[in-house]
Image (cartoon, rainbow, N blue to C red; front, top):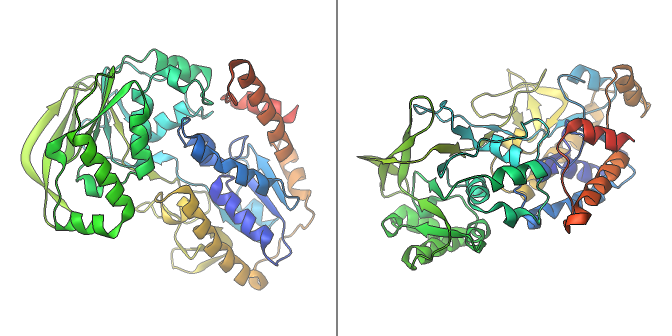
Length: 438
């Protein structure tokens, strides 16, 4: 369940195993590729290029795509047991983790996941976004926070070479934003950016990236992190270089603030500001509050403090961790007993941390355990490969296929050709299904 990277990697490993196996990849969207299509910023063609490898997996005859099928609505676990020896959930994480501070529910306070879904053309979100602020705060110092800040700060014309839909281009073009402030509770050595993502901020000719010298501070815990990780060392060196350089005159500014912990989103009827508390290092890389507060004049706040998976019907779920309880990918019930024939991989298994490539390791562990269980798996009642197709037809579920994706892919590329773009993404679900099935 899930035809994003996690699900496709699992299918790949299964298909390459010595077991005689066929795999059906179910996907809630009419199109495959999950996070690559709907979670990666449009100006990251390098990451989107992972689709090429995933495409080769889905081209194999032993793997079948069934899209536009919503687990829990169109089909449930008991239904799947009728047709399959095992079910692997690879449903990812697309909701925002909560941030419990006053004012978080004010109009103008947004979750990063919703904004990412909007600019990536997700069919489930509205076609417009309220881009009315001139000064914006982004809370968080991970790659998603950088994506949100970069998309807000860039001019719309800089994104015209990407696959952004026309409604996203028009929305960003009308945005009056001049300043984007990114806030991190801890210091530069604790930031979760990757070096490449960080450096990409400075590539826009229209965006001045500003780091403040007073935010470049390290304790023994920070120095240990720098010595222990080449990635942390590269991030810190980049931030240090930016902190001492002269500021340029690019028309928009992207400010990176460290040692500022958000304590309240200000406003009565809507966001009018953000209050942060200055923090200080405690020696081990952690921080404590200093009692010094600062109010920032912003009209919108984007919370990029982490993603969260959603519960799945008929499947155990830990609401604290936002994951399905499991041991090595084997799903466990409330008594920590293995649920026969049910497995997880990717973010629903371990939480939304790490890069896309890390899901390969998740999939390898899960598939190894599934194959070890092969002789004890409950046999399905129906072994005809087309039985599931008949089941979906009887329920009037208009599913899409890999062949249908080829039609949609060609259609999106044809939309981009007159404008010199690789593709223009289709955002309406009905249109995606229609093109895929015509």
